[in-house]
Length: 515
View 1 (cartoon, rainbow, N blue to C red):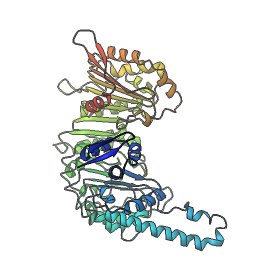
View 2 (tube, one colour; view 1 turned 120 degrees about the vertical axis):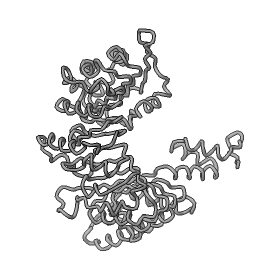
View 3 (cartoon, one colour; view 1 turned 180 degrees about the vertical axis):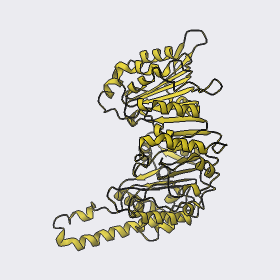
View 4 (cartoon, one colour; view 1 turned 180 degrees about the horizontal axis):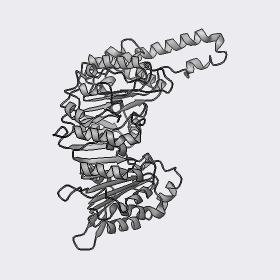
């Protein structure tokens, strides 16, 4: 199929398939502009926009969007990814602002108007979900508000025929029961599921802030299809779950749960393990006394003897002491240790010795590089546990608060006598992360960070690192206030020859090396 697009001086004929491909690469703002070109282009732009992830943080824009997509029956068939992050209860509506003065005199009318708005939105939400027959991902934060907006909403969610990814954050035990029921009767089979819960200080025990999912019932239909599972608590009969398809598990670390042997028996084909807790809930690791760490670790290690653990894992990620207490004994190709500091060095060494990773990620949390000084004269993080075991070849260091005057001196104890082939330094702010290391995602407002990064002599830093690490073949910098840069190092002629990689390809190289 072909159609004409009129321009200011002439018209051209564009192949429909080619136009669809072009639009798939356009950013949102350009798609909005393109929608003014012609009716045909407008419809294509609308379909492309609707097929991308849709995130609503406020109820009013969501209501307007519902009315828009319901106006044309084919539009909702384009929706694939929907995130609802707002509360249904919202007293800041224009319809209610006129009642702001003299609330008591008109309280009954305010409540009536609010209920009318709530019912209207519930009907809109219900109709949207009924027609979103190709929706593949649904993320709901204020679950109880969405589920109770209309009595039929939970049932409609269960009957979404194409749903593959479901994420929820209930704020009450009752909402957790509702989510369990939705999952237990769900028509589709999920590949990704995230079950969180939200805690409030001061909430009564047994009503709010309690993990009370019936996991065996909730997951029963999905266990032989799930590929990734995120759980907000290590408890709740997790060991009773069994899945041979699960590849990625994210779960908090508690005193008695999780345990490597139990997870191995539950998920024998697991490849990626992330020991994190959700920020909306309490951290079950914090109450554990530090003097209990070695005992808890040893008990977990002893359970893995006799082959009761994976032969290897691809990726393990978490804060150092949580990983230490978890006590995993199998090799790990990609080990990501967070919040490194001097007091955790011995624990970090034990983690690396057991895991023998090829790729090692070290984050300093809110510290600078001064914590690496502790490595001088201590066992190396980068050396192999024994001559026959693998050594670290890829090192990624994330530094939140670098200090320019000591940067090179601080890094020397870590890098000396290593066999690192690939090194990336990511510097500038506590939010920098290997999953989204674009400069605009990095906070640089911390004292001294902006000054340090702006005044860094990158050429001196590059040359010193290449000279220190004799095995280095690639060096990358992800530094706030600087463009992301990658150099290759050729030592075939004796002296190292350093070449800067073309500006278009650094990101691809980084992703490939760190995968």
